[in-house]
Image (cartoon, rainbow, N blue to C red):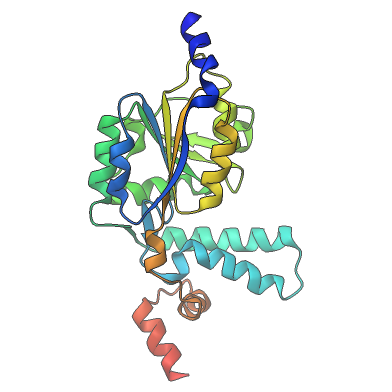
Length: 251
């Protein structure tokens, strides 16, 4: 009890910081055995080799359908189903050549290393297949079970937490509220700064040091909506980016 009270007294003096990098290895300097690390999946660990398999295509597809006057719920459902089919069909690759090596190092160094994704529960098997194809597995470095008030709307499987567009920071905070002890530090790596800022807000006041790592590698590969649109129109026939470009040039 004295240990808990001691850290409670210093809660407001613990640091919170959001850093930006395009090299995943930069997070290693912030990790030790008293650290829990959360990894976003898309555009942080992996990305699709095809434009239509990228996360930006979901938003592009959504906006295209919205312009036709369709309701948001219906548009989300159509886009979700189409994106999931494409995810199952398109291969993925690591964001960097050393991504797998860095993730493995973190898994060996950290108290926990956990996947935290905005993908929905229905993508669980595809996501595990993607990670396994890259030589990655979070089940060896994450808790067996995660409890929380929001978990009935989520899925936790093999060390990957699927929150499906819900508030990542709120989900983690609600899980922490069920624990008797906190980690000394949480490091969260994500390509979207909004998720990092939300996590920072949720952890504020807790006796936990927070490091958000804004992983901006995706900015080096601008999304090509024309290529993605052509691939989407031909799907389920698979067109490579080069084939879609030749088709576009011929129009």
